[in-house]
Length: 145
Image 1 (spheres, one colour):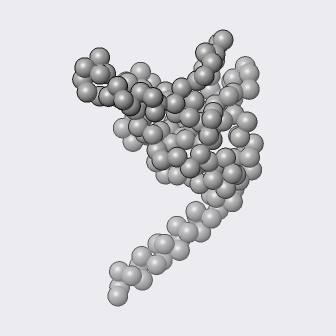
Image 2 (cartoon, rainbow, N blue to C red):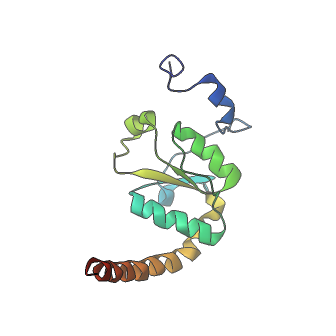
């Protein structure tokens, strides 16, 4: 159907990240309730929160450096496993199945990177708060010139 609609071209398929080995099982759970350590963690968030997590992943040295991914959203999981943090805009299928809002997107982190990201989060949030104050003051100065 995706080919018939022109949504995906056959020549795009080889560029879509995929898992080399089919998992024996897949567990979906809120992070705090997960019965096993996660391989990947999906954060559904507003763009401002995704920006903070993306900056934090870069500070922690676990960013893939890849641009935000579009469709299909499911490719973000193997891309993250292979390369580090991934931003995903969320394709229409994912948005319908999950209820992801129009004002939300994903950042995907490898489970093994969560501690490093958590350690780097305070620096990034404090820096962003200071930069926000600076930018607001600077904006006022620029508006009066």
